[in-house]
Image (tube, rainbow over all chains, first blue to last red; front, side):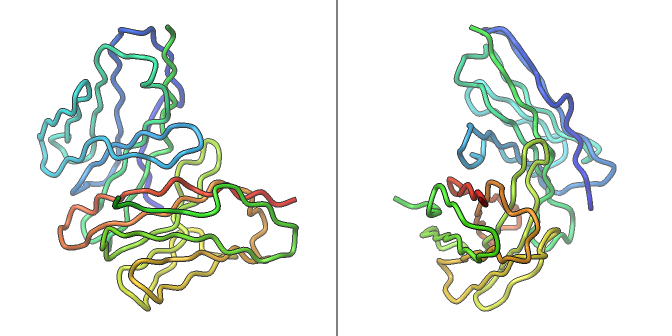
Length: 112
Length: 114
C-alpha cells in the first residue's frame, strides 16, 4: 500500500532544544495531519493542514503543508519533558474514500 | 463529554477463542475505523465504515470481523483465524461532512493471547 516515510525512527534531544521532523511521500496528498501518542494511549491530533504551503501553529508546535503536496514538516520549539512520545504523520490521498495513510512514527525522547 | 470509548483497556484470551472489542462514540461522526498497532509498524487499517450497515475491508482484514448496526457503535471481533492477534487495537471516528477526514482516536485496547 501507499507509504509515508518518517525518519529517523527515534530522536533524542535535550530539554529546551527545538526539533524538526518531516514526512515524505511519492504521492500527492490533499490533507496532512500530525498526531502524538503517549505510551499505552490513543493518538491525539495536534495539527491539521489543508492547503499546499499552509503553515499552522498550535502553541510550541508549527507544521507546514509542503508546496509540492508530497511532504509535511512538524517543528517543536523549546522542548519540555512532556513532549516525549511517538509523533505520527498522516495524509489523505485524493479519492481515498475517507481512509488515511499513516507514517510509522518517530519516537521522541527529551533529556532533562 | 464527547469522545470515543473503547473497552476493555486490557484483554486476555486463550488461543482458539473469538473475542469482541467495543468501540462507542458520541461525536455523531459518520465514519468509524479499526486499526492495529504493533511496535515499529505504525497503524494498519483493519476495517472501516462510512455509514450504518455498511463497512469495507482495510489492509489487514483477514481474521477479523465487524458490524455497524448503530451509528455510535463499531465492534471488532478478533476470530480464531487471526494468526497473530496480540497487539494494541485502536478505534477512530471522523465526520464526513467536511472533506478533511480528521480522525479522532479512542484510548485503545491491548489484546494478549495466552
